[in-house]
Length: 387
Image (cartoon, rainbow, N blue to C red; front, top):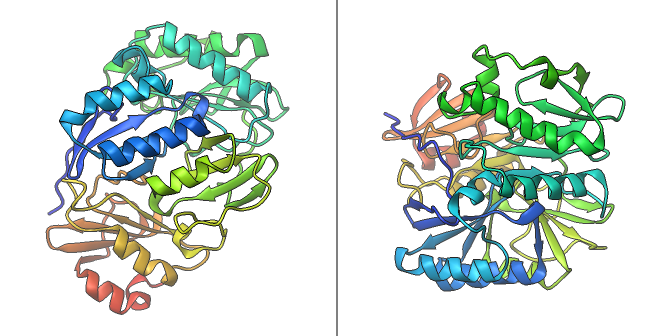
């Protein structure tokens, strides 16, 4: 049996979530960017108030793990001093946006994200805590798979468009009106009942029959999406990955000493500004062909109280057996927190071992039941098959 509970909210700095290893405290860097002093400060907090582990989430946030309740207030005080805390819980919850990390100073992505962030902090909208925005208007559309409900992106002719997630097309806008249209779309979502339905997501609202008003719908097609970038040098810096999206405090301290700032990404990678060579550190994945990039795994047991099994050790052991064009997802339960899509092979922890799903996700029908981790590691090729 695979039981799990859907909480319907994400942790924040003010409202941490209890996990098996203590409180999880989420930090939302402004514009997705951390100055070196902020990154170093977060690493210090992870050591002093947590267990040293830091997650980089699918929303380009960071999470300090293992915080005790009695240390939470002191942690908040330090975050405020670093400029990483909003004035109150409601403001922080609404300031929920992901920014394509490859912007240049003063370009549309950089300036629009700053404007949107400021207005979200100043304009109470009553949005659900999972509701978010994506600013993806660089030369490439890189955030197509990142979770967001309202997107500022590029159309096929290079124009700016504002699009509701779940809608095939968006409204073409001038630069000066892009943020205002995005906020109008958010207000429509609330007034049309989207915030009251299920978990309050735009795509589900539209799929349920809600029709956008003509003033917000538009007919502009989006530019083609690009594949998730791989680790390596790029214009403006270096992109490094993190195994399972987690790094230790010492790794973040190392990165903070390299350059003036770091940019978080929704791919569980970090873009190191102005780096001219790939960094060398055991806690970083720097090769595009590293097998660990072919596997996804949630926190797993014992850190997650809902997980039925340890996940990351198993995923790391199986990674070399996963084909170059395949993907393995190891989940501690059927909730699928780390990845909601389909993978070549998905292993789902249950009370009786792992269920194996081929070409599907954690909630699809398994091809095999009750697999023992030791058996999986002993003969991965036979069990993973085409993967």
